[in-house]
Length: 276
Image (cartoon, rainbow, N blue to C red; front, side):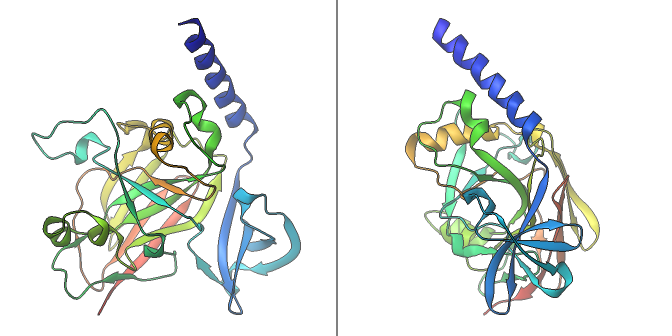
């Protein structure tokens, strides 16, 4: 018991240090002249980095106007972990919460950026939105205690976990229904220095509010998910963990526009287009 108490105190102290020393910054990933680059966004100017910020990327001295480049998803993960039924108001009536996070994975190739379209497959009849908060891992994680997990979070971004409900019902697992090409929008920035335990999220369908939530209401918080996932897998810098969605999700139709807004991250806005 004495050992555990010390670890709890250590974890609490580390959390305080992280929150007090974290520098608020907004990082982007962008395309310029056919090249994919990283940068720090300051106002409307992007200051180019020589690598991903979570890999220690430094400013090169080159700048570009945000308006002159295409913003891409501000992440480049090896693995993408998602969570099901992590908010009470999204759990179907009669279904109980579980003692462990409901984790599943999707291909990193399913991610699109803040200036990309979300693709509605022609052979799915029900494609829904799911607005979520997403954390980005900052360093390699294996068997991380909950009390130390905060130190592995680099930053936060916004996500739309698009879900083909008919595929989810038909398939033996969720890979196609949750991870098809063009499904999972992320952005617009990767923000640091935020209190990821208390972030407001608002989602809008064609300008009308459809979802509201706060990360303080998560059943399994990000620290618990990092600890749980790292017990079975190895998390690498840049990997993503999604919070799970809030409230009720509804159908997306071709021509719709869906927005996810998170404190300190901004607005992720994507149009829905017809796929093949």
